[in-house]
Amino acid sequence: MTLSDATLQAILDLQERLLIVGDPKVEVEQEGDFSKVTLYVQMPERWFHSNKHLDLVYRTLEDTSTKTSLIVVEISRYEPLDWDEA
Image 1: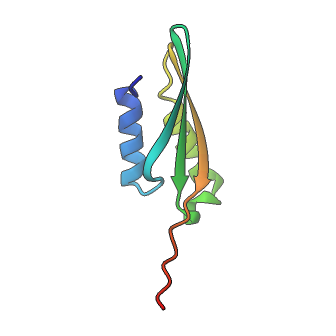
Image 2 (image 1 turned 135 degrees about the vertical axis):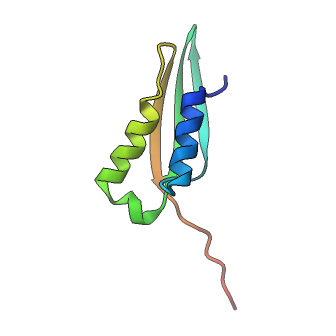
Protein backbone atom coordinates (compact mmCIF):
# COMPACT_ATOMS: atom_id res chain seq x y z
CA MET A 1 0.00 0.00 0.00
CA THR A 2 1.41 3.34 -1.00
CA LEU A 3 0.14 6.70 0.13
CA SER A 4 -1.85 8.77 -2.33
CA ASP A 5 -0.26 11.70 -4.13
CA ALA A 6 -2.51 14.04 -2.13
CA THR A 7 -1.33 12.58 1.18
CA LEU A 8 2.34 12.71 0.15
CA GLN A 9 1.93 16.32 -0.99
CA ALA A 10 0.20 17.23 2.29
CA ILE A 11 3.10 15.70 4.26
CA LEU A 12 5.64 17.66 2.19
CA ASP A 13 3.69 20.90 2.63
CA LEU A 14 3.54 20.44 6.41
CA GLN A 15 7.26 19.62 6.53
CA GLU A 16 8.11 22.73 4.50
CA ARG A 17 6.03 24.85 6.86
CA LEU A 18 7.93 23.23 9.78
CA LEU A 19 4.68 21.99 11.32
CA ILE A 20 5.87 18.38 11.35
CA VAL A 21 9.37 17.01 11.75
CA GLY A 22 10.80 14.12 9.76
CA ASP A 23 8.86 11.45 7.94
CA PRO A 24 5.75 9.99 9.54
CA LYS A 25 5.60 6.39 10.68
CA VAL A 26 2.89 4.68 8.63
CA GLU A 27 0.71 1.80 9.84
CA VAL A 28 -1.81 0.18 7.47
CA GLU A 29 -4.77 -2.04 8.36
CA GLN A 30 -6.32 -3.68 5.30
CA GLU A 31 -9.91 -4.95 5.32
CA GLY A 32 -10.86 -6.19 1.87
CA ASP A 33 -10.77 -3.26 -0.53
CA PHE A 34 -10.68 -0.71 2.31
CA SER A 35 -7.62 0.38 4.25
CA LYS A 36 -7.12 2.41 7.40
CA VAL A 37 -3.83 4.30 7.30
CA THR A 38 -2.51 5.72 10.56
CA LEU A 39 0.15 8.41 10.22
CA TYR A 40 2.26 9.00 13.32
CA VAL A 41 3.76 12.46 13.00
CA GLN A 42 5.93 14.55 15.30
CA MET A 43 5.34 18.24 15.83
CA PRO A 44 7.80 20.81 17.22
CA GLU A 45 6.98 21.82 20.80
CA ARG A 46 6.30 25.46 19.87
CA TRP A 47 3.32 24.32 17.75
CA PHE A 48 2.35 21.23 19.74
CA HIS A 49 0.48 23.23 22.40
CA SER A 50 -1.42 25.32 19.86
CA ASN A 51 -4.89 23.98 19.04
CA LYS A 52 -4.87 26.03 15.85
CA HIS A 53 -1.74 24.27 14.57
CA LEU A 54 -2.80 20.83 15.81
CA ASP A 55 -6.14 21.20 14.01
CA LEU A 56 -4.36 22.32 10.85
CA VAL A 57 -2.18 19.19 10.80
CA TYR A 58 -5.12 16.87 11.54
CA ARG A 59 -7.35 18.52 8.93
CA THR A 60 -4.66 18.74 6.24
CA LEU A 61 -3.80 15.05 6.45
CA GLU A 62 -7.21 13.57 7.24
CA ASP A 63 -8.77 15.49 4.34
CA THR A 64 -6.69 13.34 1.97
CA SER A 65 -8.82 10.29 2.85
CA THR A 66 -10.48 8.60 -0.11
CA LYS A 67 -13.38 6.18 -0.60
CA THR A 68 -11.01 3.25 -0.14
CA SER A 69 -8.50 4.70 2.32
CA LEU A 70 -9.17 6.39 5.66
CA ILE A 71 -6.32 8.56 6.93
CA VAL A 72 -6.02 8.76 10.73
CA VAL A 73 -3.44 11.04 12.33
CA GLU A 74 -1.65 10.60 15.66
CA ILE A 75 0.48 13.57 16.71
CA SER A 76 3.23 13.50 19.31
CA ARG A 77 5.62 16.19 20.48
CA TYR A 78 9.01 16.14 18.78
CA GLU A 79 11.78 15.66 21.32
CA PRO A 80 15.24 16.19 19.85
CA LEU A 81 18.06 14.13 21.25
CA ASP A 82 20.03 15.89 23.97
CA TRP A 83 23.73 15.66 23.32
CA ASP A 84 25.84 16.14 26.41
CA GLU A 85 28.77 18.42 25.75
CA ALA A 86 31.02 17.18 28.53
